[in-house]
Image 1 (tube, rainbow, N blue to C red):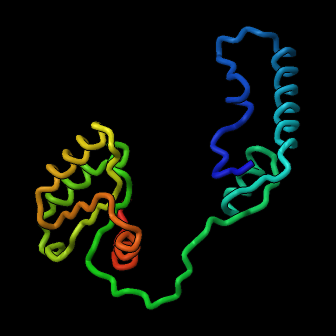
Image 2: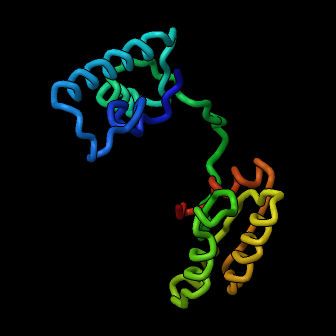
Length: 173
C-alpha cells in the first residue's frame, strides 16, 4: 500500500456512504459501523508493506486510518553544483489545463503596470496534451498573454525546467 495522503475517512466513504435519509435503527447503524471498522482493519492488515511519502503523511495516515506506515521519501536530485544567480522571474509550472488557471494568471501578470515590475518576467512551462481541448486551452492562454513580460514555454526539456526552478525568485502556484 502506498499512501500519498489519506484524504478521506474510511467510515464515511467506504464501503458505502450512508445518507441522512437512512432510517435504520441506532443499534443496526452501530453494528454496521463496527463491522465496517473491523473490515477496514482486516483489509489494511492484508498489505505486507505500507508506505507513505513523508513523515507528515505517515502521521495523518496513523491519525485518520489507524495504520502505521514506513516512510519512503521520493527521489530528489541532490546535484551539489553551484546555485545559479536568481533572476527576476516568476515561475508557474504545470500542464496547460483550466484547472491550473493559466489564462487568469497570464491576464493578471500582463495587466500589471507597476514600475517596480518592469524588469520581471512570468514564465509558464508546461505540457500541452495532444487532445483538441488541450491545444485550444493553450491557444487561449497565449491570447491572454498580452505582455512582453509573459513567456509561455510548452513541452520543454528537463534541463531547461531545472534551470527555471534554480534561477526564479518566485514560484506562483
